[in-house]
Structures are given as structure tokens and as C-alpha cells.
Length: 255
Image (cartoon, rainbow, N blue to C red; front, side, top):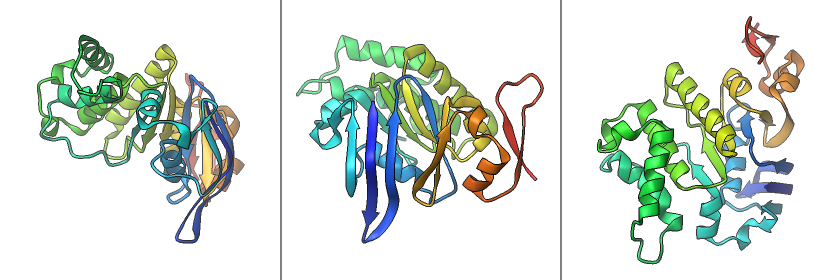
């Protein structure tokens, strides 16, 4: 659905993203991995139309990104930045309701269908119990689930998530990624998620896309990419790769 041909991005004469050729297919969870400053968030912002490429061609579903109207694009692609805007004064239900904006008419009136989609999204993310609580009173993990519910209420085909685990403890990280993977496969959603933890990426993503110094270094399944030589080329450190007993996905341990 996303097709990138020789896409670059520069700012003030400094190139942050070297020419990228990439195709992202529907119904898969992609993890963008790599060191800090490797270009992961830059690439995600280009996909989300937060910034425009300096050169190259970037299409979604066969149409160049600039040719999409904001409303039509939002109906197909949902984006959650690394630092979402403050929403403490809103209840969880009100925040999830913002996901319905692309589907509302000129007057912005909430319809029966809007309320149904909000209720359904909160049920899928098990956030219904927080519906009347202010977002500021929720824990970090609970807030992330509410933001995720907002994206689901948007009814988009593609979800773009920039480091959604950065403020979460390990238990909440596992919970969020498990829900993302489950709902992706159940609903046929495509997900591109920026992750720092290579083991979390290996466990929950269908495919890894590794960035290094502003270029796409390598991509493939966790089974194909999780080897010592490839991980050294991505992170610059020596790692051993093992498959824990009872698990099918490999994990990496720093030597």
C-alpha cells in the first residue's frame, strides 16, 4: 500500500534520509529498528505526511501522498507521534472520540455510528472501564491503550506508531505489543512501529526494517535478520542469537 522510490529527506542542507526504496504490504506488522538518529522517525513522519520528501516518489494505494486530501488520508492512515499532545482534561471516551473526526460531516456532529465505533474500539483495547475517567488519572500503560483505541476508532487501514513503548514498563510493553499484533491479524490492519528493543521487535513483528545512518540497511523476517553479523551491522555491538526453549522467535543477548 505504501510505495517509496528513491525517497530522500534533507533539512537545511543536511540529508537525514538517503534514497529509500520500500514497499509496505497490507495486513503485516513492520518494526522499524536501529540506533538513535538512524532515520526511523524521519521515515515514519514521511509515511504519515507530517513532512514531505525532498526528492523521490512516495505513494499510498497508488496515489502520490500530496494528492490525498487530509480527510481522505486520515480515513486510511492513522499516526501516533512519539509525544502525543496533552489530553489530561479529556475523558478516555472523549479522546477516543477524536478518532472519528475524519468521518464526521461539516458540522462535526457525533452520530450513532460514531458512538458505536468508539464503544467497539474501547472494547477491543479493554479500555471501556476507563471511559469516564480523565486521561491524566490513567497510568502510562492505560493511556497508551486509550490512544490506541482512538486509532482503532479512526477505522484506518494503516497504523503508524512512533516509539509507543518509550514510557512503559516491561509488563505494559508486552501488553501493548501483544494487543497490536493480535488486532492487526484479526482486523487485517497494517502497522509500522518504531521500536528500540530488538527482542520485542523480533517477538511481535512480522518483518523487521533496519535503519542505519539515514539509510535502509536491511529488511526481512525476524528469523532471517536475527543473526550476529546482521545485528552487529545494525547496532555496532556483538550479540549472540538464541531461540529460548518453547519459543519460535529468536532473541539477541549482548556478548
